[in-house]
Picture 1 (cartoon, rainbow, N blue to C red):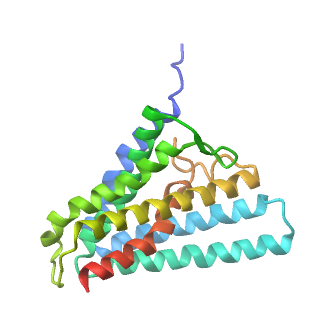
Picture 2 (cartoon, rainbow, N blue to C red; picture 1 turned 135 degrees about the vertical axis):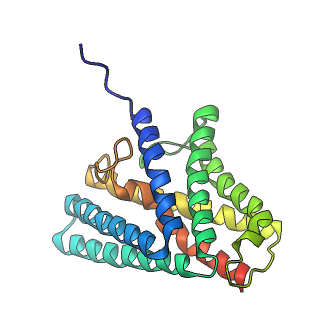
Length: 231
């Protein structure tokens, strides 16, 4: 007798348990390994973006325009990620950024599941609640608040200045807001296109774009924060 299929949550946990160590290892090994990984992810994400655009119930001209927007949006995000990793203390800051995004997702999930409450945007993302949204803002704020004590570790050859706790918390909240906005933007596009996921490359998670939607829009905010901290 065949066993029961794995639940979506189980698949998500297994995929995360495999992918997170791989990604963190490539971040730590060196700039070019990580940049290569980012490049592959961006290319796959662009293919997924193009597929969403193709399914949109809009005129062909607007579909081409949407594909062009995706090309520049994702291309610029690649340059931002490469720039972040190549900065003085780039390893530290890249890890901090990923921790902010993961904390935002994790705390949002915990708050949403345990507290429930009113739906945030039932027509775009039915599972999102306002309590989950609050968690998405609190997660990165906590990470950047703790970051103050870790700042001396980031000095891999470049000057590091101190940052006040209010600045760190404000930056964390801004990362949470922009990250959630990026998530909702992709969710709205998928719903308009009649698609559940952007792809199926990651079991339990969907496509690459499903995983990096929050990261893409939050990245400019984090870069501004790093510039402020290290200026």
